[in-house]
Image (cartoon, rainbow, N blue to C red; front, top):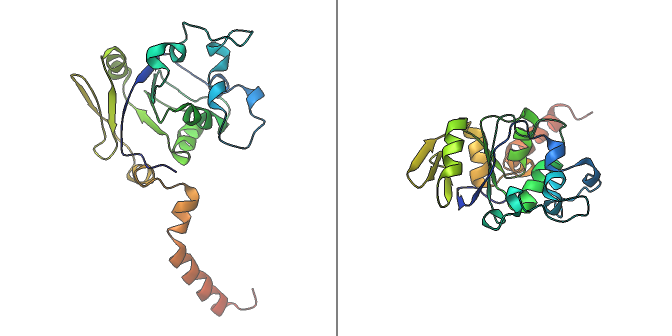
Length: 195
């Protein structure tokens, strides 16, 4: 997993509440077990018309936001079903950070498992970021979000922060404990050889 320390980029404002996982990646695109190729289907129901043509009014279709690495949204982002394809689609599109007032718990956890920072800020701060000119910078080690003339501090559990800063997925975190696991297994094999 790619480490996340500081990210400076375009922040696309999709300022709506209750963006559910079916809107993020509709069910018909869940037939894959690979994490690539889903970005083209991100928000497809509101991004494309019935013939598959881009809707010019949708924020990610607008030239200024095509390469957005940050997404600004409303409360309860990622609600709905627990599909891990939602963060896969965001990441495949290029979005590494979603800033919203609140997140659905399963989506929140899936983001950390896939290298995306789900960052909670009050809606008033998100509105200010949406109106700020220029790029937005997220500094994870310092736990700040800045834009021209703006600065906000955010809270994050130290273990989650460490996971992203070091780029550790669940397997890498387990492998970091390999000496302790091997010592336990050796001790257990000696104490209970019949198992």
